[in-house]
Image (cartoon, rainbow, N blue to C red; front, side, top):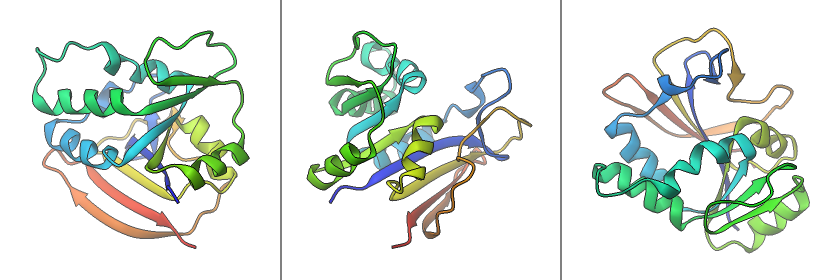
Length: 185
């Protein structure tokens, strides 16, 4: 059975974007980016909310020749993944390997987990909250960046209790700290 993995880059106080909707402060440096690439390599299908999809669709069209290898590698991982975008307003998807679903169906995701050959990733805190509330998230990968933004959009949902086992921790040269967890069975 495939795992559903939620990965987020967040401020130390737990936000993926600040009160102005900015998230440029969370951009990973090369060391962190290479580590993210390794984590994302196991993911064959990405479940994305509309806003997260709009941000990540960038990776479909960037020119590869002018970017360093770690950026090219992430773009290739993105392009190779199947993408399911949950949106009530998106008419067509401008990226390859993408389908649009109008609503999040926990049972359909359970079926996908049961039949997928590779892991699933869920992107965007609002969509991830639906998956958390439905008991679908198997792993949580958090990158805490060394700053406090004081408010904005939370990385983790409220109203969910999920007991976790620590898988690994890593500290990066730029002060970012990664912690990976598995849901207790």
